[in-house]
Length: 106
Length: 118
Image (cartoon, rainbow over all chains, first blue to last red; front, side, top):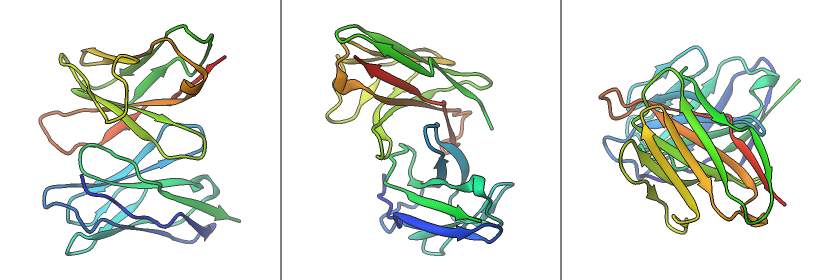
């Protein structure tokens, strides 16, 4: 499964959009991109996943570049409860990297 | 989303004893389940992948005789930490995927089990 690279931390103001980037330059043609988040001391929560088209659900939007080497998770109106570690994962085996610690501030 | 239930949420055991953790998919059939452990301030580390009715596949460096995984039904997998020692104290998390004939469905996670070995 391909490796992913994410910034270790990001801040976002409450009510603004949070854009979390992920690089996955070694992604294979049939590997999906998955996003999960983990709030302290809980199991990870599924957010969204996609192959090559942009995806949107009630939680977030996923933008995948045309060459599929990177993607961005967008939380359109971040709230304090969105403070968590966000993980971008590529492939079916669900190997977790270090993720991005998102802090949403009032 | 689908529900994965893990039990117990926390457990304290004496050194040398064994502890069993259960992971159940409540509203779907989980052909594949994953087991992870997580140390403080670190990411999740995949320990093993189990497929219903077959032996689990362990990641490199994970002792299969110490961490026994059983996936006997499509809704239940168990992880037994045998002869637990203080260094086994960790947060253990399971995940289940509903194959449903599709190769790339999302997986759902249990709430985790905090194991403390004293």
